[in-house]
Image 1: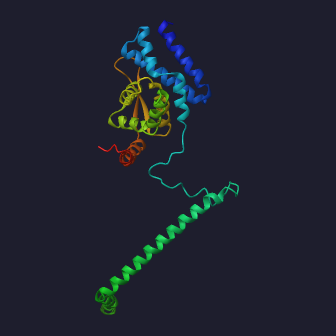
Image 2 (image 1 turned 120 degrees about the vertical axis):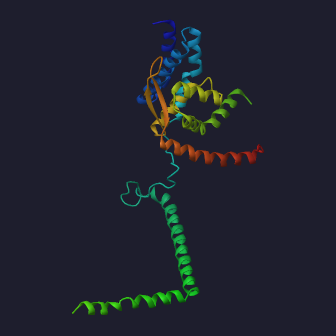
Image 3 (image 1 turned 45 degrees about the vertical axis):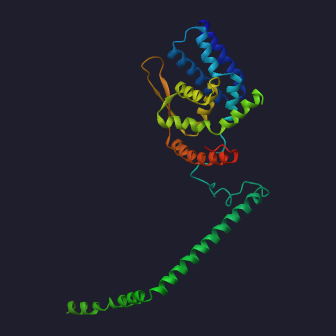
Length: 165
Length: 114
């Protein structure tokens, strides 16, 4: 082990100590990522001198602040841009929650449904009014259609009459 | 304003935005760790905390916004390239819209409009 290798090993050992509070998988991944970074940065710059390796490690930064960054990178419940509402299913059917928890969310949900119902009623009303106005404004075409439709079955008897005998 | 306050301010400003800088860099082309981290640190003035970006990359991969693939290099060890996933691309598009709205709101209030 050369002196520069020792420098790298000592740095990674400091990270490992600082990262002892992280879950094992997260800690191992972090150390593997940093080791890979150092290995590639060294290969690229052909950093063989102690000073060059020190520069790589200095740029990586203080082990404690790297682990602090890992602390903040927990998987927060993110709201994906495509799904503004949480799926509705978990609440009504099986309720594993104590009843005290539910009322907190319930009013919001009810309010949402009320708003939806009101909007739906308005849409329906607007549609009916529109249809009514249309029917009244163009009174003749509908009646024409009515005349045509009953007229259609009429040819049938003559048709069956001619083919029958 | 002290140095530590200054650092705290910069950290706070970066917190919500840096991951989208990662996505935007990978939207141009795939990059391996060292390249990606160096481009970010140079672009955002973080040349002494490159290591702090690996936990971020790790989370983005767990969340499916980026993926990695190994590729042989002409010289030296193989490189692990980071690529943008369709999910990451959607997140980036969404953030770009949000960012413009947010930025202009802040600019109007601060009086820093161009």
